[in-house]
Length: 159
View 1 (cartoon, rainbow, N blue to C red):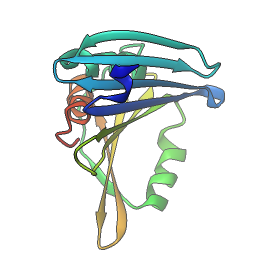
View 2 (view 1 turned 135 degrees about the vertical axis):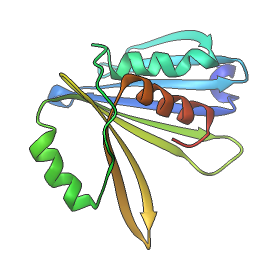
View 3 (view 1 turned 90 degrees about the vertical axis):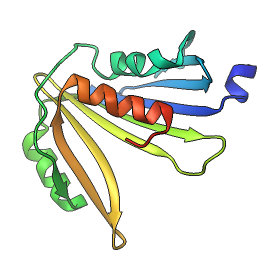
View 4 (view 1 turned 180 degrees about the horizontal axis):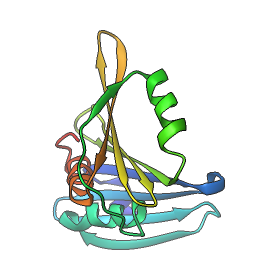
């Protein structure tokens, strides 16, 4: 319980699968060690300990259990409406969406990265704000790039 309450950083990976089934992986970061808590939609909890440097790999295992890989592609910057139109057209084959959010006990800024896992490709989503308007940056990503983005959220380096 102390590892859950006294962590330096908490990373929440929420996987949404077909039929709106959800799975959460909470990572409580402590220097070199992380406690991971896997919670499924039925409420079962499973705990494990890993090295902090391996935490992103565990999150990727949840987000991309089929180990889909794809090449990195060019990023598109879209408004919310443009993204919704693109999602209807191009993300029909998505099998899971994993939102990864990292929060520190020291800083009040959260880091985010979202991974869309389709049968043959991975797509990354990052957001920024420009003149008070949300801008969504979407690109096909390789497994290596996705792992790098998730690692940045785990360590608080910004995705």
